[in-house]
Every structure is written in C-alpha cells, then in structure tokens.
Length: 196
Image 1: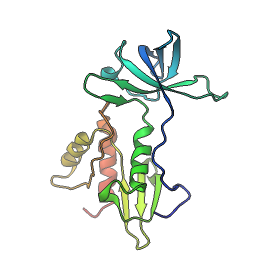
Image 2: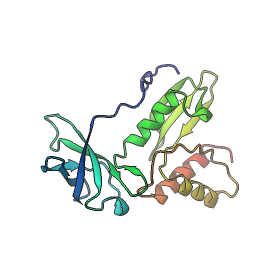
Image 3: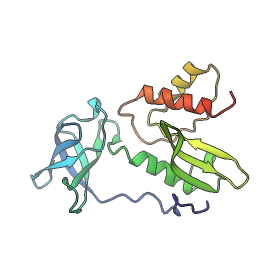
Image 4: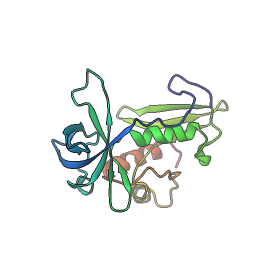
C-alpha cells in the first residue's frame, strides 16, 4: 500500500504497557476509580461515552495504560475489562486503529489490492466514514467499522430488502453499546453512495 498523508507503513498496533487493577467504580461517564496491585486507588480516564451497563461491574479485573504527559489531568486510561467469558476493550479509539493497521498489513483479505488508505473521510455535510481505500485504477472502497455487525446487517435489511451492504466482519471484541441510530444513518449513507 502506498504511503499517503494519512497512512504510514504498518508495523502492527503498538499497545502501551498495561497495568492490572480492580475496578472500584465508574462515574461521571468518563472517570473510573481503580485499585492497583499495591493498594493505591487511582482515577483513570474512561474513553467510552456509552452506558457500558454490562461492562462496569465493581470488583472486575481491569487493565490501564499510564501516560506521563503534563497536559493530561488523568495519567491513567482504562483500556480493558475482564468479563466472565472474554476480555472487552473499553477504549473506543482502538477498533478503528486495529482495523486500519490490519488492512495495511494485508490481514483482511477482502480488502487487499488497494493502493491508498485514508481515515475519517467526509462523505456529506454531516457524515464521516472510518476508512476510504482507493487504487490507481479508480476503484474505491468505503469501510465503516461497527463493533456490533449483526445490528448493522439488521439495519441494512430494514432499509433495503436484499441489499448487500458489503460488510466484512473483523472481530474487534464484544459489543458494549449498539448505537442503532448511528448504524441506520451510516447504512443510508452507503445506499446514497451506490446506484441501488
């Protein structure tokens, strides 16, 4: 894949060192208190605006990253929580980064063969889609990353019976909150960009 202003050669998704702890509580939507292994309770930034009703039970093991940036008020970021059957990603920025890096590395076979990748592409006055793939021969592929793919297919079926919206599932972890209105809006955007 050729380098564009919004792409760099893929070296994989670099994760920061993760610090284990136990969730004490989540509050004010963007903050969580976590008890570290040494007994210290720290306040971490919760980078997820969803309700997370199923994923913020006090007492669950969690993993934080530490950022020694003097401009940050909170030095810790809540990255993951251990649930009974899986580990769930809390940081909503990670799935888009993970999918983009996977496409660059050629790990999503249905999306191979494009020369350029651009993230956060404006497609209308009110909409940005996650990724635009393009090739020198003019082929383009828009990629919208949804954590809950089943909901996206359901919305597409409601909008246009039998329409194949071309979703390639890429597993990014358990769905925390399905924003069906956002999925519905993006499905309409895809329809308007086709000749269906």
